[in-house]
Image (cartoon, rainbow, N blue to C red):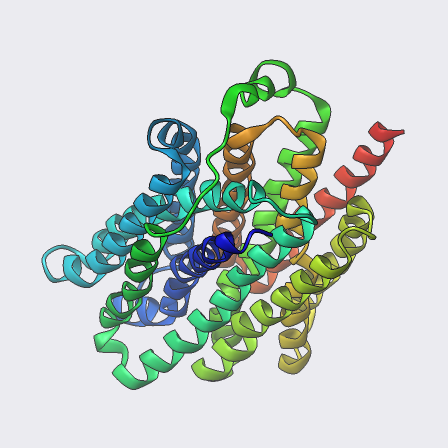
Length: 388
C-alpha cells in the first residue's frame, strides 16, 4: 500500500474504537441505572434499541451526506456527533429527568456511530491495497480491541468514581472522538466514483443474493450485540459474581475472543470459503447461547460467553467483504443498506432479550436468541444452493 495512506488506516482504526466506546460503555452502567433509577430490563434494553435504531436512521442518510460533502468530511462530522453526545450525557442529567437525558444523549452519539459504520469501511475498501477481506477483518478487529479497552477502563472508572459520579465516565470518553476528529481532518482519503452505485438500487435490491446478505447482517448484529450488551449484567445478577469480575470475564473476554477471531480470519480469509465459515461459526454460536442460557455453573457460562465472541467474529466483516465481491458496483449506497441491516439486528436482538428477561428471566432470553445464528446457518445453505 502507498505509505501516504498509513495515517488514513490509523484514523479508520480510531473510528472503530470510537464506535466501540459508543456501543459498549453504557451497558457497563446498566447495574447502576437499575439500582439507582429502578429501571426494568426492558427499559435498559430499550436504550440499546434506541442506540442502534438511531444508527439505522444515520445509515439511511449517510449516502446523501457523502454525496454532498464527501467521505472525509463525513468521517469528521460523525466524530463531532460522537463527541457532543458523550458530553451531553454529562450535562443533561443535571437539568432534566435522567432517563430522558440518557435517551437524548444516546440519539446524538448514535447518529455519529451510524455514520462511522457507513463511511469507515468504504474508506478502507477504496485504499490501493490487496487482500480486501483481510484488511476489512483487521479494521473490524479494532472494534473488538476498542471494546476491550472500553469495558476495562469503564469498569476501572466506575470502581474509582463510585456509582454517584457515573456522569464523568462519558465525559472522559469524549476526549477520544474529539482527538480522532482532528486527526481525520489531516489524512488523505480516496473519494468514491459513485456513477454505478445506484445500479444496486435499480436492478439488484430484490435480488435473492442481496436479500440473503441482508439476513446475514441482521442476524450478525443481533448475535453479536445481544451477547455483548447483556453479558455484564447477566454475570452479575444471573451468575452472582462481582461487577469487576462480571465486566472483565463477560463483555471484555467476549471482545478479546472476537478480536482474535477477526485477526485469524484476516490471515486466512483468502483460503477459507466465507459461507462455510458462516455455517461452522453459526453452529458454534448457537451452542454458546444455549450453554449460557441453560448452564447453572458460572465458570462454564462465562467461558461460553467468551467463546461466543470468537464464533461471531467473522459474521460482520466477512459479510461486508462478501457483499463487495457479490455486488462490486454497489458503492456507498450498498454499504449503507448493509450497515442499516446490521444495525437493525443490533437494535432488535438486545431489546428482544431484555423484553423476554422481564417476563421469564435472562436465561430464557439467551435461549430464544439462538434464532439469530440458526437463521444464519439456514441462509448460508440457501446461498450455497443459489450458487449451484
